[in-house]
Length: 194
Picture (cartoon, rainbow, N blue to C red):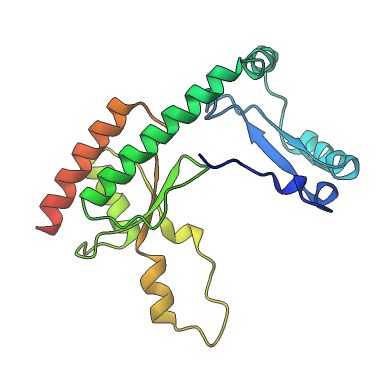
């Protein structure tokens, strides 16, 4: 297993780093929107000033629950890590089996960024639309994660070719849900590609 090293732990970086996190995926409470930012005092003060003007506070019961959750025993976090690794490996295998290209396994995320099968006639947006409409499976088109063409020396055709060929999948669901999604996705790909 890889060990996470915070950028704030490197020399000269603590005073230049903002660490953000939330309870969402770690404690399976994505709708609560309880999170935090850790930063040097001057930056934390600015964040707090902006936050109070843009949003409201999380409800008090959620804040109390957050304290309880953050006091979970170390075994909870070890178990969570094992579960996510199992789900990640399962989804990587599923995606590869149906023809996606997975260039790397995520080491600290619950998203897989995969390239569409070579014989898939769809762009990332078209594929995701088909997946949602025909299979009821949600994914995110990859084009939103690429920067815009910014250099006159870059070929627009080359740029367009790779940025519309990726899809982001989340694997932070239970195995039964992932399995059902995999079966539905297989059917869509078999029907449309073959």
